[in-house]
Amino acid sequence: MKHFRGVHEKELQQFFHATPKDFSKDLDKKNLGIALGATLYIPGSMPDIKSKLTNNQLKNLTNAIICLEDSIADSELFLAENNVIHELRLIDQGFEKGVISEHELPLLFLRIRNAEQLQKLAEQLGSTIRLFTGIVFPKCTTSNAENFLSCLQDINQYYSTYLYALPILETKEIIYAESREQEITSLYKLFKQYEDIILTIRVGATDFTSLFGLRRPGNRTVYDIKLVSDCLTAILNQFTRQEDNFIVSGPVYDYFSSQNHAITTDDLNGFEAVLWNEVQLDIDNGFFGKTCIHPSQIDIVNAAYIVPKEIYDDARLIVGNKDETNGVLRSSARNKMNEVKPHYNWALKILTQAEIYGVLKENVTSLDFLQHIKNVQLTRRLKINN
Image (tube, rainbow, N blue to C red; front, side, top):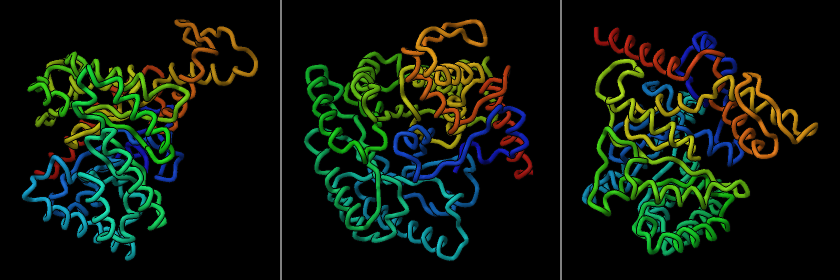
C-alpha cells in the first residue's frame, strides 16, 4: 500500500523529489497512524463492498472504515451486519484463490456500536476478522472505554491477531465545558494503559455540533465554530504531547463537490477549497489524517500532507546536525532560523511524513499535483462516458 498508487510512476517523477514509500499494517504503530491520511467511511449496508474496494475504482484509497453505527438505521442493523460478514468472507475467498492481493486492498477498519456487538461479530467472523486492521469505537467515554478496550484485547488473544483500537471522542462529556477537563484527563490515564493498541484517536465534530443544535455551513471550516474548535484544542493539548505516543485524526468535513473539475486557488467558495483550507489548519494544529465521507475528498486530504522540498531540507538539516551542534542553523532557503533543540521533534515528524507522503520538487506545490490528479481523473471519466 502507498499513497497516490493510482498515479503512474512517470507522472509522480514530474512532481516529486522523493516519491511516497510503501507501507502496510505491519508498520510501527505511530508511523502507521501518521500514514493513514484520508480515511473513507463506507456504510456497512452498502452492497458489493468487495468490488468497491478491490476493482481499482478507488486507486488512491489507502484505508476505509466500514460503519455499523450512525450510518445504519436501527431497523437495518441486522441486515448490515450480515452484509459485512458476507463481504469479508468474499474478500477472504479472493485472497485464498489469488484473485485479490494484499497490495490492492486498503487497510480495513470496522466501526461498531458497543463491545457486545464487537464480541458477537468476532464470533461470527472467526479467523476472517484478521482482514481488519482495527476497530473504531464511537462515542467513547470513561464509562464505556475500558470495557471496549479489554474486549478488544481478549479478541486479539483468542484469535491470535493484532487489531488496533480507534476510539472516537464525540460526546457531551467532552464538549461541555464543566466536564471536559475531568473527562479528557480520565480518558488520557485510561488510554495510557492501552497505548500499545490505540492506533489513532478520532474526533467527531458533527456529533459535537449536534449537541448544540448546530450544523456548520459548507463555507466554514470547523475552526470557525468556536464551541468545537475550543474542544478540539483541549483534545490536542492532552493527547499530542511529545512524551506520549498518540496520533489524533482530524474531524470530517461533511460537504463534497459534485462537480468534476480541477481544484484552483481562485475557487475559495467551493467545498473543495474549504476542505483544502481546513486540512491546512488540521496540520498546523497537530492532527494527522482526516475522516472522509466521499471519494472526492481523498486526494485533497492526502495531497496536503506531501512535504515541500524546503521543509524537507530544513528537517534533514536539523536531524543531521543534532550530534554536532544544538544551536542555530540557517536554512538553505536563507529565510528562517532552524534551532536544533526546539525544532528537533518537529523535524523527526516531517521526515516520517516525507517517507509516507513523499517530497515535492522545488517550486512545485501540492496544489499543482492535486490539480494534475483531478484533471487525469476527469479525463478518464469522460473517456468512459463517451
